[in-house]
Image (cartoon, rainbow, N blue to C red; front, side, top):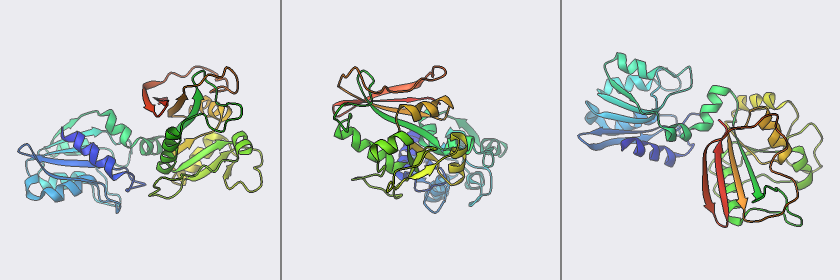
Length: 310
């Protein structure tokens, strides 16, 4: 399916278009792919790249694109105008654009006589999930990451790590992929974490490293202190361009974020150990939280549980 190819192109491009979303596009004519592309670092949208590659063969063709084509003039002209001018007969897109300034592409194309199909692809929404939250909620997309024993402890006596080396490498890859990494004050004072991405590629540089706490930090700890209410601090971070935040703190900060409905995704590394004591996964919540799209992935000796709150 050509939408799958468009998703693949967008994943390969990564976040090179930041702060814009990454869009993959494929032009198909006569059952053959005649043009494809993804949003470029300079900001040229994936649709425009694919149409340029297709040239005259775009006339009467089908365009598959991961995100609803934009209908506004931002840093580039509207993609809808380029699609109409190229003579594309049909557009299939995977996810609606949550940005009110850019939305309306579907209607614009239909009004111009282009056949439009909304494929409603969860994969397309996940592709730009951080950007979507940043645009629609005006806060970063928050991922809570934690390592636990099989019976739910986040600490083991005499051990610095619960998770395996393979799991810890994934964590460093996660740090390299987000805009900021954060812990609470208790973790900052007890562990003095570095929170940087080590021994992995960091194409966008190191993430910002934060502590959410009203108390002082130990001397020499090179982390950024955020003292205000969580909602206000996340809004301020969004204004500063932070679209994604990896939260690595302990049970108290995690419960604080969850209680205010500020966690979007959970990553729980479960190690094959039993302890029966220590600190538990979460402090008490005011009410239960129902998770969705739960998956389990083997990682070395561990199992990674992934689930969405939103």
